[in-house]
Image (cartoon, rainbow, N blue to C red; front, side):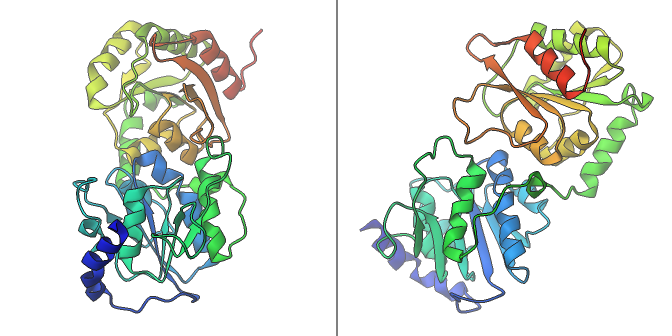
Length: 353
């Protein structure tokens, strides 16, 4: 009953269309919908790049939450970014956002599984082709013209490869992931931010620098003593300066860590935006971070990264070529500094005697 009511309520949205939807064409108007955070949007970039490679004349739009919009904007193959209204909850009708999603030929709901809110939204776009994960058989889905069944190993298959499955109805062969698919086109203001920070001491000395992130999009707070031990190792074994970054809520802890390290080569860097951080990471020799959005961001910049990892499955693991995952115990707010130091030595190519 709900899908039928949605269609009845959403019928007037057709008036927003300027072009009739097309099933087959060489220059499709494609809409990719991807909700949630920065990391979710980052791992949708390979799907977008494959679409552009196969349909170079297409107009590709992305509809996403505000936290993912800067990443979508930084993807060179995207023509338009539509920010979904953040007041959209389970009690709000999908038409609340669907009014902004008309006039596309094909719609792909790039969610690594069935999501009822997004599934209800898909038919309200009035696209000729709608693709998303649904275990219904073709022709029997209440939501998609071309439903795609989830893989059996959905918990271990990475989100990138899972989203590649959504290309099957478009007759695109299964692509092979390449790290270059995550590359971002950084805006000039982000590049200026990085240049301004690197012009200050201790970074202006020109010996290179490491970035240590103390924040995560989950409530994770590791012990300052463990961070200090790792930074002390860096200071003893390299000439690198150390930039401490993190969200505003962790500013006091960052200051405490800088005092604990007691070195002029350790400095606080103003809390950057995601793209500011990406510009900084592109110049960094090393990155240490808890798992989360920042770890995925460094996959895009291909910065050598040590990730304090607590995930139990592989669907969200970082995809950087030079990423090392070190187990961390969130419950005790601890990680093994010796293991982190060994990972750092490996990434920096320093053999210990």
